[in-house]
Length: 117
Image (cartoon, rainbow, N blue to C red; front, top):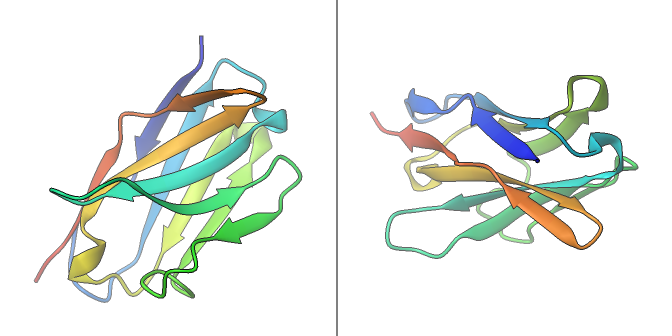
């Protein structure tokens, strides 16, 4: 049974940084592709980034996060990270991690990020 636990969210001021973590239990983390998504209130869930099992990184083309968010992973800790810098109020959302192993995918429960002065 695979379970994903996100952490690191919170209330921050504009311009601040946060690092979100997603730790997996169960499954073979080293062969999994890991994604991050976010969902703002009343809006659809949107993909942000992926880091493959081999360490390749892919990001949304959206200018809204380009150059400010970085995805990484630590396979020894079974954890994926999303480093977010220069946060803006429009980054406020629930952030979810997603784990893909072959044809299967798994979701975490999400962590809330609120950017407000």
